[in-house]
Image (cartoon, rainbow, N blue to C red):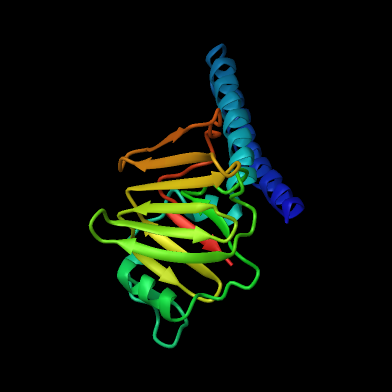
Length: 223
């Protein structure tokens, strides 16, 4: 999968680079000196920068996320699932009731993605769901895993569940807790201000510029 992503990232970046290179060559040949040299170099430099950025973005987030993520609209997520599909659109209360009656069977566990952030800090480790509850007083959905990792989702909205994933499209804040030992845990807080995702942690971890996208799903548990 990583090899495929690298190949696609390289090809996409190469196409973008070739486009800017062609534009730079046209500018160089059509404009009068010395403006042709200055503008051609500027366009070529922008092409190099954007191509490199696109390559890194695809490597970090994946092909489909880059194509649809930051430019996605929530309007489609507001739609009801197609009749006959196994996709359920639930409220936090309905999700809690579903879990209490029939615990979702992600046999191989789930990986965690928070606004597109999915690598490291045990996010890409498979976790078995242990319990799930929603506190309507503080509007927090808590997801506990058997390895003692915990997700706390503030103001979860638009929840989809199928046999292969659990997705929360919108949320105000998400807290990811990873146990270090019996007495301590690492915490990673993601706060959605509607303009940017702000990160806080009790560790020295700092996100990469391409790790998180406000247009991504707030929470995605992949089975």
